[in-house]
Image (cartoon, rainbow over all chains, first blue to last red; front, side, top):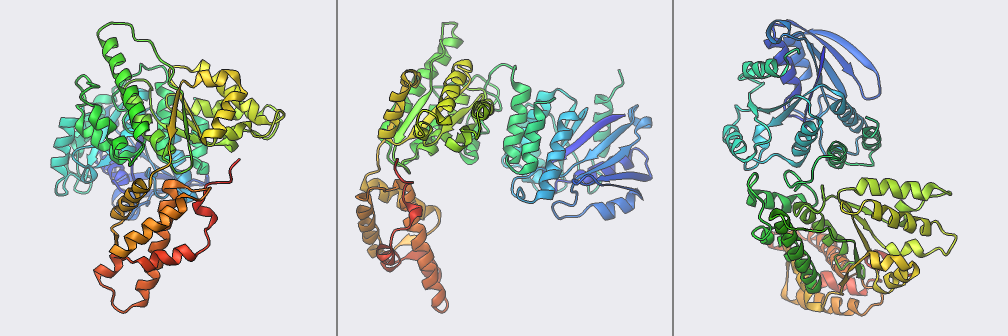
Length: 201
Length: 347
């Protein structure tokens, strides 16, 4: 089982992307392990639809701690993988202990996981330049030399496509996959990219 | 990896911000990677560095001469500090030429770039240090160019052996960047038995071991620093670049004030300007004048007084909430000075 971390700033759509990927792989039910920062673990089995209703919202920090979504991609990707959906990394809630622990957990996974999916909200790019935190995430992941996928989410929002194009022109470090987790647009591209990086040797 | 654990632990405890912990993680992975320029510009003051990034081409050869203006702009934007700017200009030119020489296959020996910033509080020592980090990184002198700011309490430990350990871990953290020791003379304060001496020795040793990828900047008052340097004979030769930070002149103080007010979208009425000038002139003669910091405190206190005044009147206009009157400052002058806008007690 490949351990794959989904990382990004708060409210960029990490959880929804995880669930969409699970859905795209033909899963009806999601097995969700919710690992809280204090060490407690909660397990839930939900249908994808339920999970989306419960776990996804437009406020920051819906996910505190790590949610694990098992994605059996055996049919489409040739390998099963586990998506670790993590607490968003962000500077300004640094004094909240729970979130801080969650972020620390995220970083631990970042050094341990075998694959990294980095989600960026395309609408927050400015002149096609990544924010400081996103840049660092990109650099650390690349320095670790594990399969890395940059995802530009919320491509349906106004201006997002333009920013993505600008980014593609400016930055040659990673080729972003543009998608909209909300509408399920571009998820198949993502699946294809994953299956390419995820070949069993 | 065991190296990453302490970093994450520090984040969990709130000692490190997310950004700096990510920086350090990267440092762990990059330690043996070659030094280069790409992606290193993210440190220091982010808003200034965004501009630089936008201006400099990402992939093509980095031209230090063409990039000079953009790189040094944050420094040039500082008010006063003419001497500091001159020295840093020299330094930049030298390093840029070394970069070119290296590119042309000539010998370019590394120089010792450890520095001493001597000046009174509030003269911009820390600000300049923060600007220098990214500049050095861009010129390829440092791998990361982050600035680690420490003071005596961070270096000196509580029991025998603790000091060396603490100092060494700080040196490791500053690796690839700048270690800025504020009020460095305090290390020599306690006499022979004090752990401060041990910190100095460890620092000197660490600098030698890590030469080439670490710049140490010691900052403090001019007189105290020269005494500090005289204590350890090896010390002053190890810090070849000594930059004096003179006190700001009255005009410069006023410029600082007007920049501060502009940034916060406040305005001075004409009588307020002359009152402010008077106050600053008066403050400047005080023995423990805090330069830029005093200016900021004077203005901030006036802003609070103005807020009090505005809240009292019915239906304040845009004009009202923006303007500071002389009265807002004058109360200030009668007010006994608070310890906050003074420099810490001299040694």
